[in-house]
Amino acid sequence: MPDELPELQVEPQAVTTPTPEIETIEGEPFDAARAMRTIEKLRAEIKELKPKARQADELSAAEQKRKEAEMTELQKLQAALEKTQSELKAAQLSQLKKDIAVKVELPLIFADRLQGDTAEELEADAKKILEALPKAPKPPPVSATNPGAGASQKETIDQQRARVYGTGFSPLDPEYAQSHGGGVIWPEPRNP
Image (spheres, rainbow, N blue to C red):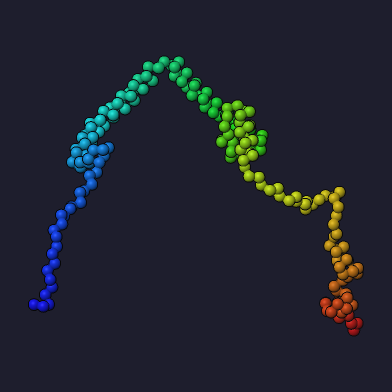
């Protein structure tokens, strides 16, 4: 047959399958089964240790109660005194911080943020904070609404009318109203 195609000759090639990459952990190949066994072993250890941890907490609480019970009355009073002294010192430091803030004109909201133990340290810190705060522009001076007897008086309303309209201004004057284009005009009363 003339329409037949010639046979192609194909040389067989070696088929290569890609080698899967083996995950390694710290240089050793990863084995899922081994990892699961390790996890199960750790879970079992944790399960065993939980009751022991609870028991240790209970024992330490019981030991603390025993120590408190063994304390003499004097020791209890000394512990209370130390606690009260520390509270007093904290209150005094807080008041000192507020006093320093007022002295340097620092807003009181920043008083708790002051650092230091002495008045000098607190004052230096307050000044640093005050310098770091943005400065508000000064408002323009406000004139007094009631300046008092000795202040210079401006033009009164009557003086303004006299200056604008001239003296003798009366909107009820018929001549003035007619000369300025209108106004209120009352007829002259008639004698019957």
